[in-house]
Amino acid sequence: MLNRASVVLSAVVALSACAGTLANVGLPSAPRHPTQILVRFERTADAAAVQALKDRAGVTATLVEYPLVPGLACLQVREGEVDKALATLSGDPLVRYAEPDFVRSVDRRNDPLGVDVQSTPYGITMVRAPQTWAAGGGTGAARGAGARVAVLDTGVAFGHPDLPVPVLTETFIAGQAVDDLHSHGTHCSGTVLALDNDLGVIGVAPEAQLMIGKVLGNSGSGSDGSVLAGVNWAVANGADVISMSLGGAGFSQAFADSVIAANNAGVTVVAAAGNSASSNPSYPASYPGVISVSAIDSNQNLASFSNFGPLISMAAPGVGVQSTIPALLTQVTWDNVPRSANRMTGSAVGQATGQAIYCGLGGTAADFPPSVAGNIAHVRRGGGISFQTKTQNALNAGAVGVVISNNVAGAFTGTLNQSFGVPVVSISQSDGNALEAASGVVTTIGTLQTGFTYASFNGTSMACPHVSGVAALLYAVPGDHTAAQIRTAMEVTATDLGTPGRDDQFGNGLVNAEAARAFLVTLPLACNLADITQVGGTAELIGTPDGQLTVDDLIVFVNLFSDGTGCPIGIGTSSCSPADVTGVGGPPAGPDGQLTVDDVIGFINSFSDGCV
Image (cartoon, rainbow, N blue to C red):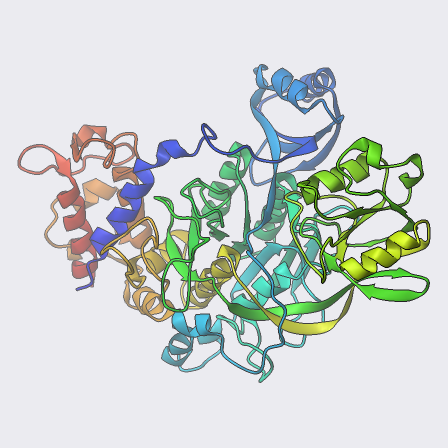
């Protein structure tokens, strides 16, 4: 029989051992929204007292309330007063916690544009999606029909011929439509469920339903407040899977609470592990209840950029992944002549018009004349000055857009290392020379969609939707499956990579849709307690009121056994007193009066062997 016990147990032991790694101590600082905070008030707090506290803290507006977590809200304060507001709120008994609204960004490495021909991307084959379709007889259910996946990202390119019409869409980015002028969200959607229509590519679950929540702006970034609004919307509207190819530093208790609430509502939550090639936790992937996905290449090697560590759940293809994108064109136009440009990563997507004022290298405030206010700043690349600094100096001077021209021949692109609220583009050296000579000419910069195409991207962002697609295939399997069952099916059956057993690079291994489906189909949903062999006192152990032992009972038992509190397996001990196991009535002890890892393995094996 498949050794399900050791695989499941290794996963929960690893989670238990890392329960203390979720704080922000010693980790890189996380970008924060300048005017928003997340606060959870006590449920019994008097409304008038809460309003008085908000007034004392300088809260100017309640932007969003999140029904998944009672008392949780996103509040607005004046710029520069975030820390003051947090200090006031955190010290009050009406508040459970108050924290910054951290900024999350897409987990993509690069985006070389290239039109694909009709094909099945290697990742779809590697996760054994075609075999899964065949195992189900090629029916709609075998291809994800009936499952609903919410892609929370930069939106979608409406009308892409290789994507289904979304069943629901919503934007959580003020002033921006759901349309994807970044390309990231459209790419991730295609990997989940691109149509089987002889065009371009096919997704993991080509007959699943698509929900699109725009939680990241066209710059590729968005705050936790926006992402949490998307999570609440997805759960409220019947999503089975939430796919988040986004992340960043900074632990949020509000987000952690929301994930648990989503899991309890039956929703599987999947997120990209991050692209910093480190074991530092990236959120939301590192929250309990989230399936954290690392990236591998076509040779099943860990991608050079992929995060790793004890919280990785499984691996999926994330290098050279072909999928759907909008065809976007960025231009700088003056004298009625459009010139080719590249949008800098972190730039706002939109249009800006004004006089192009030449500002040299843009390294100091003195480089920007007063005339740049309300106009477009043109700065040169170089001088040892980052694109981020040049752009920030331009904004400080009042610019409504920034053009960065090359200091050597040819074009270039790059990242601003943060999100900016104005368009920032790069142009070639020759075009920069011409624009400098015409300093003061009315210039327009902007990005527009010109059609639909395909591209190959790299990142854990690309690995995440492979797993989300597999989860959709499993939700389409007949039966009312829970989020815990879906996750267990994928983790237990993942194809082992690297060091035998669970490891920090690949987690439980490469997600295997075919094996996970077979596991879910053959695993009984319930059985009579009398059918369980080898373990005495099973009814007393679980204490199910209906006299049935279900898969959920098994998962709850394993999690309680290794939850890091009552029986802290993996944190310096290999056994505990049965009385220390919380939430389980009267677990049977071994001959020595101890409940050990072997006892749990025996119980799991008995469950899967004897439940007929």
